[in-house]
Image 1 (cartoon, rainbow, N blue to C red):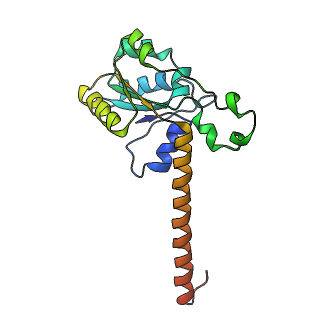
Image 2: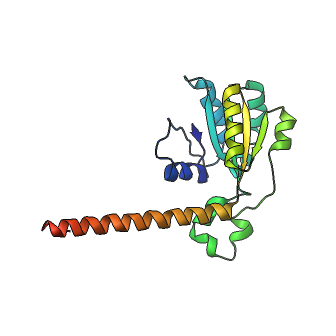
Image 3: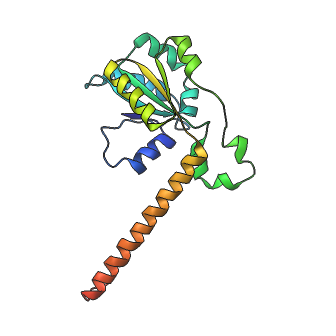
Length: 190
């Protein structure tokens, strides 16, 4: 798995309890050259293939990789998380400031279907878990180059993330409280 900086690597870190070998790189802003690097990872993979998880803004920054991908046709499945741009910034304090949109939020309405068609790249779109599972299964079964664009909503993703953090905090408080109570019952220090 080659994982882009920004929100994809954070999602992987927060929600994936068990992951395969993960490769990533760090550019000037963290999102430079992701698709080019994933191409190299796929060509060098001893397992004979790779999946690249990348955000929409990072993919847009590296559109020049698409002709190289088309020419090399590596065993690579590119999964673009398209949340309309800049979803990571909803997680940062800047989100509450007046200048948030459009300077940090970087909203856009781009899709990758036309550019993939233009370069002759296999393309699939998914906006549900079921559609993604079908497209990803087909891409892996094909064993060659494929791009899957997953449409999601950054505001909804941020709300879900906040809810999950709330649940995690509540569970942690209960565990800590029960541990303190158990320790006190045994006469231990807390």
